Each structure stands twice: as C-alpha cells, then as structure tokens.
Image (cartoon, rainbow, N blue to C red):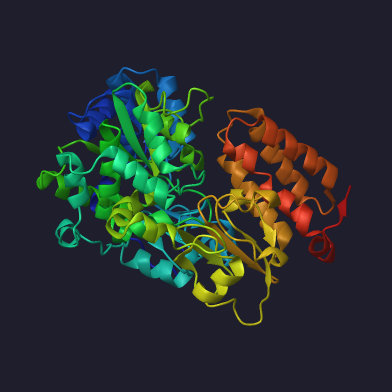
Length: 572
C-alpha cells in the first residue's frame, strides 16, 4: 500500500476466517463450515442464492470446496451449484489452484453518469494508491446512485461523489457497512392513516372491483419499464387457478434509475402496504420482494419494517419473503427474476406461457414494480382524479424522473406525466451547468434510446416516444451536453449490454460484442450497424438484446452532424 493510504485494520473475525481458508480445505471441514452457517435453514433449491450469500458474507468468497459441500448438503449436482454461483457478478468464485481475493473490495461504478463525472480517473487513482494484496479495485455497473456520481462501493458502504481522499478516510475508520437510513417507521405511518386501506380490504369494506376501477381511472401503469395497466395484471392473474404468488421487482438495474431506492429509503411502509394490497387482490399464498444486492441499506431497513408488521400482527410471520439479488441486470426482466427466485441463473424464459399463467414455482404470479404499488395507498387517499389530473400536454398522472448527467440539480423529481425535457430541466433541475449547452438525452435509461436537443419538447410519457425509436421505460433521464463525447457514450452503453447479456441467445450474446467492436472503430459502418441491430431486435429472446441497439440507432438517425464534427466518420 502506498504511503498515502492508511493501514487497514481488518475485523478480527474476517482475518481469522480468511487465514484458515488460504490452503485447500478438506471436504469435511468445508461441510462443517457450511452447516454451521446455514444452521437449520431448509435445503430447498429456491434458497440457493441466499445460502451462497451467507457463505460469502462470512468467508469473503466462495471456494469450490464450499460449493461442493453445499451441493452435498442440498443434495444438488455440483454443476447446478456452480452454474448458478458463476452466473452472478457479486459471487467471488475461487478455484482450487487460486488464492482468495483481498479482504477489501472497492467497486467503482462505470455507468454513463459516473463516466461523465470522472469514474475512470477515480478508478486509476485508486489502483495506483492501493496495495493489490490488501484492496481490490474493480469496475461495476450502475449502483442506483447516478445523482451522486461518481459512486463506488467499499465492501457494503457506498461513497457518493467519491474521491480518493474519501476512500482513504473510510478505510482508516473501517467504514465497510451501509450508512444508516432515516426511514418512516410503522407507528409514524399509521398516524397518517397507513394500513387502513389494507384493513378495509381484508374486512370487506373495499372490494377488488372497486380498487381495480380506481386504478383504471387513475391510469396507473407499471412504472418499471413496460407500462402495462396495473388493474389488467390483477385481472389476468386472478383468472388463473390458485395457488398464486405476488412478486415485487425491486431490481432496478437500468442505468440511470434510482427512483425505487428513493421511495424505499423514505417510506418503506407505504410501499409494503401497496404490495400487501396487491397480494390480497390476487389472494397470493406469499409475497416475495426481490431486491437488488446493490442496496444493502434498503435490505436492512426492509427487514426491520417487515419485522414491525409481524410484531403488530399485520402480516403472518414469513408471509413476506425478502430475497437478495446478486448482481445481474437481466434479473430486472420478470421471467429472469422468477428463475433467480427459484435459485437458478437468471435467464429469461421463452413466452408463452407468461408469468401471469406460469410464474414462480410454475404458479400464476403477479409481478409489479416498487413504485407502481407505492402509489396505490396514495391514489386511494387522494382520489383517482387527483392522480390522473396531474399530467401535461394531454397526458395523465405523475412520473418519478430519475435525472442525472449535465444538470445542476440531479435527483428524483416528481413531475407531471408528459412534461418535456426542456420543462423538466428548467423547472425541476436548475438548468444546465454554466457554459454548457444541451446536446441530447436518454429518456429511459440505457435501453430507452437517445434524442437530440432539437427534440427536447416531446412529452415524456408512455406511448409518446415510440415514433422516435425511444421509450420512457423507468423514466431514467440522462442529460448530455456539448462537452460529452458521443462515441464514448455509445461505447459505454454497449459495453454495459455486452457485460450484462445472460448469454442464452446468440443474437444478444454475439451481437452486443460485435456492435461494441464496430463502435470502437474510428469509421462507423452504418450499414453494418443497422443490419446487426435488426437481427438483434428481431431474434433476441428478451428486451435486453431487443433494446440494446436503441442508443446506436438514435445516434445514427439524429446525430450525424455531431459525429462528423467529432471526426467519427460515418460511411454507408
């Protein structure tokens, strides 16, 4: 470690454990460790990710010896254990002839917002300062904190607006755990009328038909990307035979998106009430919450909030099941999420059947986004007309825009649906930094496409951007200015899709890699890029491969002059 970096004093427990794991373990010793860590936890396949997390959290990595022991305990093939563990980025697999990783890992976010804020220079500075035997510095995809770029994760502690000096201080004081979050507890939420709607539903004072009519009138749609009407999802799942399950997708991995974390950190019980009402509406046997692993602080507070509900007898113990993801963007796709909940690699399923027919454990499953269910208690309290009347330019409702990039006030901004980018920037985001001019924007994160400044007056909502080859998705608005390099933007986005492809289908697996190669060339071949894009959109199994070309096609369509001016010669 350099002279500028403080000596790291590791927790005694981890030092002791790691020292004992340097050599090859015996199978009996590994099985003893696994049994001690898992205790009397069931050996069901759907708990595999949870078991892997527990081992890695304690040991610091996953040795093949531990995986063999886990396979023996769970009575599963070693191949299945290894396939699942190796699929997820947050599991550190150590082969028999390898040394474990250092005790401390720093993950530097390399998503577009962080790249624009200097993440690469930050990563290089940290690599130069750290002793690689003690601290590992690696790149990582979006961490859901784009408004505080650049961001890194030191063990489980996220450092926003990160600098080498902040990291050195955190290392010196061993700040490895997530920061405490000031969230609204159950008692405070109940004083505002919280959980009264749920109680009324259970008592028969509110009917399912009444709530569906309310959501239809309000125009509430899925706010995780697809925008499917919420009440229709309830209808489809209710039409299937019981048992049924309710699943909440809290795996917002779309680069530029952080609105779900914003609401979970402030009002977890409002979210939980909306989730429980959704679960009640379809008579679900259990409510699952799939939370991205990049949100360790939210994981902690949600467990505390769920415990409050169980203690207050609002839910039966074990009815709400909170599960950790393990670093896989593809698990934001609902069928891949289901696969992950079942303890498998998160690869999308072929459809039909849809998850509303055969989802979790092959049973009908309602999958909703965090923000979608968050709005249900509020819409009931304030009225469907209140929500629907908020829009602009002929649109209905409110949108939570996650805004990042070249604006003075990035963050989550609750604004009328249909607001334009120019209005959003001027009224909510404090304009652009002095001396910069708007170049373009991504209206829906990495997969939502890219539009030029000349199209900043298009209403931002569902069904308004398709004509431009874009969509609003999760409303992750990433703003570019004239100081940004469009080729670097394109390479950053395509590198993300290449890294996050699950590899199941050739058009996506090979297409994203080939397209990144083409974008790295100084001379872009338009015909090649367009042909490749068409194949990916037509033949990929899921939305990742289908949407990956969107930003590139947008650049080719609307940014030819800027690309030429930047000496990115475009032929074809």
